[in-house]
Amino acid sequence: MRYFFVTTPIYYVNDKPHIGHAYSTIIADSVARFKRLSGYRVFFMTGTDEHGLKIEREAAARAVTPRKLADDVHTKFKDLFKLLNISFDRFIRTTDPDHESTVQTAFKKLLEKGDVYLSEYEGWYCVPDETFLTEKSLVEGNCPQCGRAAARVKEKSYFLKLGKYESRLLDYIESHPGFIKPSFRKNEVVSFLKEGLNDLSISRTSFVWGIPVPGDENHVIYVWFDALLNYLTGIGFGDYLKYGNKNGGETFLRFFKTANHVVGKDILKFHSVYWPIMLFALDLPLPETIFAHGWWLMDNKKMSKSLGNVVDPLDLISEYGADALRYYLLREVPPGLDGDFNPDNFITRYNSDLANDLGNLVSRSAAMLAKYMGGEIPGASAGEDNPLLSFADDLAGGLNERYDNYEFSKILEDAFRFVNMVNKYINDNAPWKLNPEEEDGLKTLKKILRTAFVSIYYASYFIYPFMPETSGKINALLNVGPFEFENVKIERGGGLKGFAGGIFNRAHKINMDEKARGVLFPKK
Image (cartoon, rainbow, N blue to C red; front, side):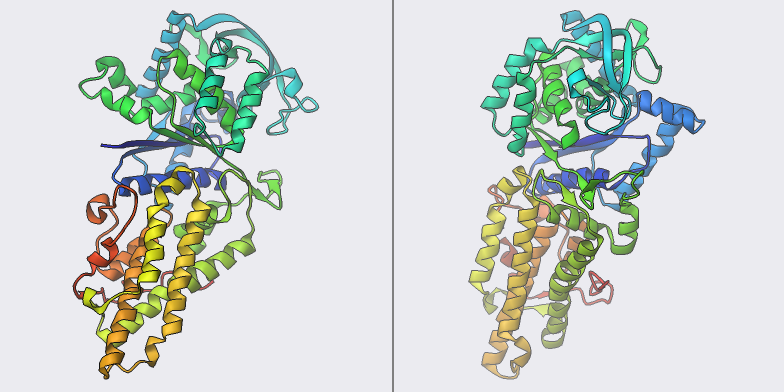
């Protein structure tokens, strides 16, 4: 059994979700869906980060308790993810009892080991980003990340030793080229490490909304130390501590060493420096990959409420559907780069790629099959256009590597190149000009329509991780089951060689009811 663990960041509950939250989560969901289809035992986790000074202050501003704020806002994320068809296995909250237990257990272990110690912190702190800052990192007294004023703080604090593991982490990054993706992000992390690490303050006494330090409840545990440990909680760290490598505890390590953390570029430092050092100190393996995606901008500016340039994913889903948003976000931007959200470009993509190219291919093929074949896809004896389907087989065979490198834009570009090849094949062969009353005409017509529908099945497979709802509609029209490993039986290399044709080996009736033959993407 092959294991695969994928996570999103856990999201702050100080406000409703935005397009960036949707982006991270769609990335992780698409990878999870593909890996399940390829025979992996997948665990996909997302959730909310509910502790910290920022949450305490936001709750006070709304005249509610921090718990009430967290209870109310976390449901907004769940609601969005339901609309986006996110297939998570666990939605974790940092207020979950098993997570609080994990955090306190980890803190205590590190304290006993000597990797955590009590001292005093004096320095700069950014409340919105919940991050400590050095003097030289400030930009005119402001946080370099969000641009807001940093606060000077001085208080007793527990510290995590970072310098102890600095060289070990550098060596690990250099010897594991796939640890940080895209590869150009690695240089940022290495440069940061080579500047030298100060020990990290991991507790606070200036607020109360957090997990208490075990044995010293005047301190609450720093929100990032708390949040990063969610990746252990969700896959059974408690069972591992209790049972070790037996009685279910072994599943924890099988999953965790395959971990793929999907994060925004602004929190890469926490995941590629602090998190690995925490794991070294806990004697745990490091994740397989940390993938840092870029930001979505509007008019080349980072989205913010103050600028009024925030895109609400709920509005787009309501107007265009979840799959259109999923497609646009993953098609538009190469891995790791920023993207500029352009509403006009979004509509163009929707109408051109989805409504015209894919939607038109499916609807006109179904109409021709109904007209000429009574809705019956000809069997394998009709023959297929091998060059066209060979392109699809080659594309399918390379998907594992592309998903491992988060090359969604390239996958979708090639998938829709294939869709256009099928449209061109139909146009060039003009089945509507053939005479089905003649033997040669009928033979050619069957071959064209069979090739078209086997190709549509391929297209449905290619888009499934990105557009599961649309793929489901296509499969319903084709009268075949949903994409699941048991149904598809993908080859170990990720290919579909011969399988798509085999599905329709014999004559196969498509679903002729009006709902199944409905329009996939109404033109906007």
